Amino acid sequence: MKFVTIGYGDQAGYDSTDPAVRNAAHDHDARLVKEGVVMGRVGRPVQVRNHDAAGITTQPGPFMSSGLPVAGFAMIEADTLDDAIALASQSPCAVAQGVIEVWPLQE
Image 1 (cartoon, rainbow, N blue to C red):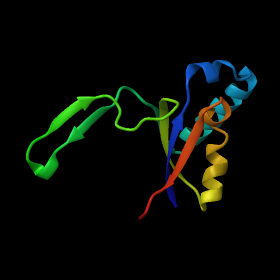
Image 2 (image 1 turned 135 degrees about the horizontal axis):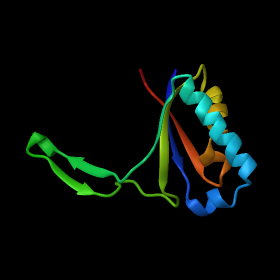
Image 3 (image 1 turned 180 degrees about the vertical axis):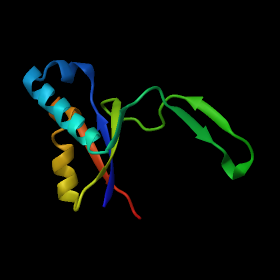
């Protein structure tokens, strides 16, 4: 199964986490990337609309909002949702006072 993960976190939470815990989380993510996981930190978003295919409009900034800013994403493969959750739980956003959403992809 494939899953999209979205990590949310801020610098204050990151900075307040023990450096050894953060480093282990970064090592975990580096192993996932080496195994082929597509992962990245986010830049500034742009909203795109083309209602009724009548013309493209854009607007800078996020459409979604949350208590923490979006920090990154990954596309992972796992046998079950529980396995995907176990993978996500060791990443920096999860251990550094943030949160990760795990979204199963419908194939």
